[in-house]
Amino acid sequence: MQDEITVRGIVLQVTLLGEYDKRLVVLTEQLGKVTIFANGARRKNSRFAAVTQVFTMGSFHVRPGKNTYTLTDAKIERVFLDLTQDMEQYASASYCCELTDYFTREGVGGKDELNLLYMSFLALLEGTPGPAAVRAAFAIKLLDIEGEMPAETDIAAVQYVLSCPIIRTFRFQAGEESTSWLETVAKKALDRVLDYPLKSEAILSEINSLK
Image: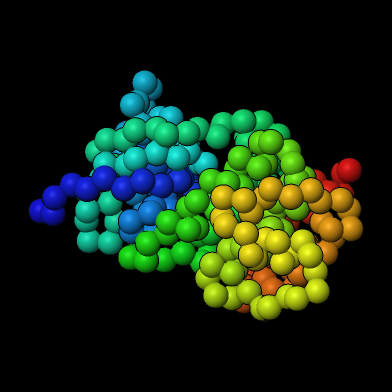
């Protein structure tokens, strides 16, 4: 049996299993994207209840298996529960998680992607720039991290996102025109590499149609 290890990460996806368990997809600094089974996480008063929520950041003490891990202990660093209270914020955070899930792999460290995802959550909560600008900037920066972003030389907002450090990715003001440019560039770049439509995009389209 392999020794237990501790990894730091953010919960990208949660699937309910049976009556009491959960399966988590977690992006970690050390191991990239991993699958973690949290047995008994849905039981009343389970100590894993809070840390196994989507968007939660924490340290996960796990026991390695063949292709997955089993949660044995955990410590929460930050719970982004407020993102679940607003439909557009929730859908936007889900969009960022879904894109991250698409591009990250197990065994390839995800420090930059993890930091970018964390900063996107903070930006969504702060409300500046708006959620559409956050989503577009996230996509552009993520594609750049993954080496999939074409060079763009004539759009100031895009150049800012590409050239700034991750911690400052969302530190810009975006009016309607800048946001529109960011969205156009992000969509064009994503269309080149994505093999399937994102589920969160359908939800976001429905939300936008109600505005």
